[in-house]
Image (cartoon, rainbow, N blue to C red; front, side):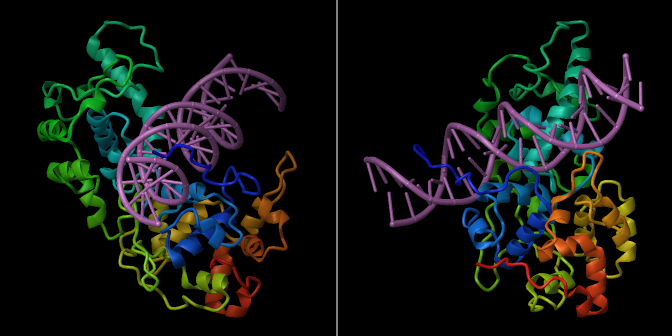
Length: 364
DNA sequence: AAGCTCAGCAACCGCCGAGCA
DNA sequence: ATGCTCGGCGGTTGCTGAGCT
């Protein structure tokens, strides 16, 4: 199957590399309005979004999705990840299904950068002077077969994780669902603040559908969940992105979404990494609904007073200028130049204040 | 202060399975 | 039954910033 498949996109004329805030906003705006039933058609329909569908999908799933957690992994999450990896191997999507708000890419990165070493160290300690010359790149990274339950009796530290340094992928792939259930049954996973138990995990792993996610106020638009169903009326079964209505006014130019969409999940702001800025944001936001946009703006470096933002747009020592600054003809760029926070605030105060933005073409 | 190294992360690449005509 | 399209997954790459010399 799938042989002779054409590239997902013609690589000519499409942007590559890092996403610009403008592209992010276009993607968000489009998905908010039309959903993402067809990733490949999305860039064509979202005028001005010169990205291949795959790229859009990845960007959405890994970065723009509103139900993403941001910030460092908690200790519980790390331990959960370690144990799940021990059971599942490099099945990042399945692991991600059990870590709400975390993406497979993020998990993969965390594993490769942090946990792999930690587990390696733990395994080294456990072996107590055993073979010390482990090859960093091959050991640990190899998916470990489901270990014997005995080491898992300890519940707290990562030393319970066994590391299989055999080469190849012999182990993990052999796990059947039944075997997995068997193993899962015996392993206590510290999902203390994740709010779900082993049964739920079991369901997650066997069904590739995480009840934790689905039970959350957000929809199940994680990378491991079924695709959102798009209906022309309801558009999609994904959480309404809580872009401030003013932004929609700005984007649409016609105030199509001017009425505040009280998203059901809006009160359940995802866990921000360090809570401090989140709490500050929500404190400033009386409705508690603008956290996500604020967070996104912060992530995009767009957050802050206009002066600050404009200051950011100064050429760096290498003389590089943010592309947004260079494309002042683009109304979207103008919007970002002015700073979305300021623009949004202005929009609240008066539509004419944000009149610089007339339209972001997000429709087909 | 400058250069170098390394860790972290976002994005890309290629393959696979499912679904459909 | 076959071939194609599409979404999804896992591995890898490359950029960037922080830390070190």
